[in-house]
Length: 320
Length: 320
Image (cartoon, rainbow over all chains, first blue to last red; front, side, top):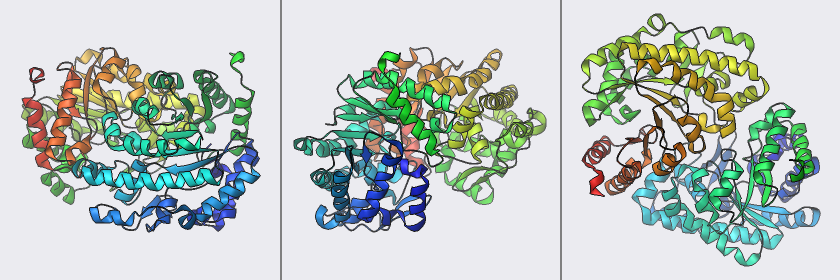
């Protein structure tokens, strides 16, 4: 469960003392925040605590993560010459704190650690817009108007992301998640033309490492069939698309991850449990990793998540 | 094309002199802003200039429309006793300016006028959250936790909306659009349980008036089949779902409206035109009203929209 920490008092205490970027750049703190939900909930895997902008800062992009807003970029990337600011990532020099944390986690954890990076379309949207965006207007305008520049930008971001994820696996991550928050803003044709090639470049570039590759986006119902052919082993699905529908669209080619609406954890226990069992049923008892359909909402009660983990662990297809 | 005015200098000039709510509450200004895009673009229908919160203000809810943010509610609706603040709408007393504008427009316009109202789920989200929301956390929490209160709230909002739309038709609107911006945040099961009944109440309540009823939401790919059974005659589809896919999901039961990505109007002419023709092809040359898949983006060039209208008018299925 991504962002599970946000519901924990022990995480909020750390956030009271440190900025988000400080947490993301300090090995001991990355380790601690990654471990917090594993200790509390007994989940079956841990996901690296980080933010998708960390490797961008690593190559020298000036940015900050602003409370209540999200990442803000000092000088947006909008012209050919701005590309020079996106040099290749040298993980051991640029993001040593992430690798150090992964090495420590790989020793400590009894469950697999999932590495984590943002996908090129989503990174590009932050870089071009200069921050979070609802409509991705500048991003799409650039994509349509300066297609050559767009593809060069996507290639640079793919190469940064590939180096970053390879280094995470080499440091001890047992799986990786490529996180594409905004890609659901694209029509299926635009996804295939403008976003998919860079995703394939990354996922295929990890093929020799033999770790499961998870690809996740939000609002991607119409993109699932193309996403399933990106080179991923597991496809994350948000709560909008029932898993049995997602299975038909992906023709069984990949495992599915998801997809309880995070808001269901804010309701009474019986509502959450009923919906969790519905997800498990639709997941079909195989080729399915249970998860929320998006990150944990900050308002979520830690007890509710603990109960959810119990419900999932207790479920068996034979119960149905 | 909803919000077509935002791209027009003559609209921006009026917005420089008047607040959004002033524009929505002054008959002459409603008429002028509704006519502006019709004059410029030669479109085949006009949509009433308004905002979905107008009838809420009409029944006495304190609110404002804040520049760059959206509607903000003074005292959110969160408890049983808050429902008393949502009394029935008496259109001729509560929103006379809207009816007066529609009467004038019905006389002036050579094309049909589409009336306009927000749907209960979307109105409820503004009322409960107190303003625009990305995750609709409080809304869903209330929906899951206090289901009886939720349904009573939705009934009140449905009755307000039904009175409002009936009055618009009686004043001269030749069609209506029920606008459900946020309903795509719900899973299909939640849509059917928590949102659809109030939509049916409105659309069926308009049945005797014999005007086309258009129902539109954003990010509703998985909801289209349920939405098509809501009592609407026309279903709006955003750009995420290709129209041929939408046609299969709705089993041909309704006409479709849409669905060019508004951002396509920011690209070069050939990109916009190619995509517009793709929409027309997928629409199949019948049972399809061409439109953007969402409102016009403020950055859009007025010339681009004029060209788009020409492309659509010039197209024929025989060209393919």
